[in-house]
Amino acid sequence: MRQLLNTLFVTTPNAYLRLEGETLCVEVEREKRLQVPLHHIGSVVAFGDVMLTPAVLRRCAQDGRGVVLLDRNGEFSARIEGPVSGNILLRQAQHDAAGNALTALGIARACVVGKLRNARQVLLRGAREAKNTEDTQSLQQASRLLANQIRKLPEVVDLDLVRGLEGDGARIYFAAIPLLIRANQRKVFNFERRSRRPPLDRFNALISFLYTLLVNDCRSALEGVGLDPQLGFLHAVRPGRPALALDLMEEFRPIMVDRLALTLINRGQLTEQNFESRVGGAVYLSEQGRKVVLTAYQQRKQEELTHPLLEQTVAIGLLPHVQARLLARTLRGEMEGYLPFLTR
Image (cartoon, rainbow, N blue to C red; front, side, top):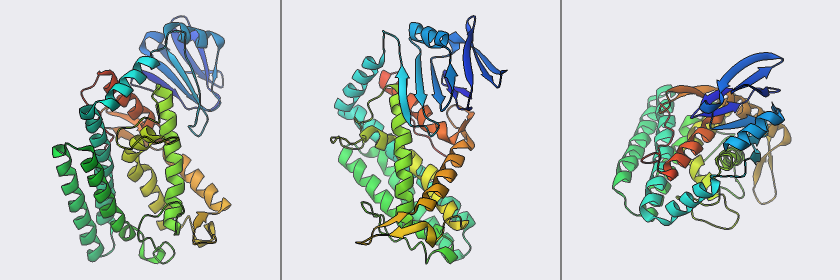
């Protein structure tokens, strides 16, 4: 359990939350693990089987303190609020921002900066770990091209041009991905380009599955804050499309999905037998393959790193929730501009 941005995240299974005077106590197996003054907490986010007493729920509702319930995989279940909700004001701010070309451009640009900066870090790490000079030089060259794209972004004043730079950056990045796959695995995972609906090779099948998990996590984080996951800034609005969740996931694609996919492949945790080919050339993970990936994804979410803005260690699985709250603060005008999560 962690307290970040005045939000208490309870991730410990079977944790029990109760009131003790003006403090909120968290117990696990009848042992008090945490005690926080209520006035320090703006909201509570509970993952999985976490119990809250009726007194806690009632007091949070009375104080206007949101309680968000997610399942143990982080999927949104419910949000409990009192009669006076600030969400309408937040959603109004979101709609106002989406209708303001300058504000929308700034948030869209931040999403792309986050994506390309984190993708570049993946390539630079790959260059350091490459086994031969040719791969190292190619990865370094790709990282320089991405740096050029990033440098252009602050000067761009048109949303379509931002999308164009994002697309160019993605092509540079994915063209270098095969160099991050170990030589002895490149025949089985012969990735050439991004393909979706359906994925046409094993690497595409793997990252498509992981991207689906990630977008659900981002959607849950946005709903937990009270934002409308369908109204985005970078991605165009379409019926049924979680545009804002797609915006938020951009900065996390390289670090939560691509690096995990490469690790599973390079360590031999996934093999040819974990995939199935369908009529028409589509390739999907088998049931056993999905189990391997789901287990690894959950383990990855438990790993911790230091958030550069908060200067606190944060579980990777909580990063979408933290960033969703930073986005909400930006929309409320409490922050000058949205700052994406940038890995080092």
